[in-house]
View 1 (spheres, helix red, strand yellow):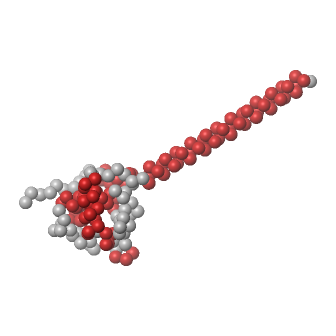
View 2: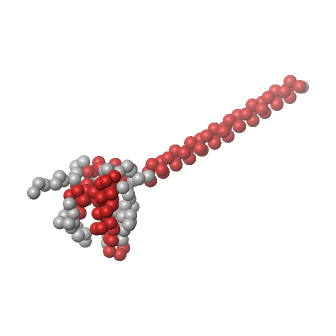
Length: 159
């Protein structure tokens, strides 16, 4: 009888060991899914690397503060409900427009947006666009830069 009891006890020990391994595997799987999800959320929401040198971004920030902030907000959050000035940050559609189109809009104005071509240099216009782009996610920058390949910044004309 003792050998039958021993076999039963051995089977129970093996079953308990299998159950422990399954539980451990479940925890490893759950932690892996959590870490993969956290990484995806982090990479999706983190800002992209700037498309310009720090000096250009600083110039763009200065130009933005002097010319754009009053309508588009401190961090590009916009005031579409009050004065029909859309957000320029990652929450709205600004990142859908290629560099050349953004440059043209700042230079020549739009339906409600004033033209800045007579007030700002080409360098300042490009700088403010590069500054605005610091608010976009890496995926938005990648998409916008892909579109910009067919509609890039225009080169300044020699006077």
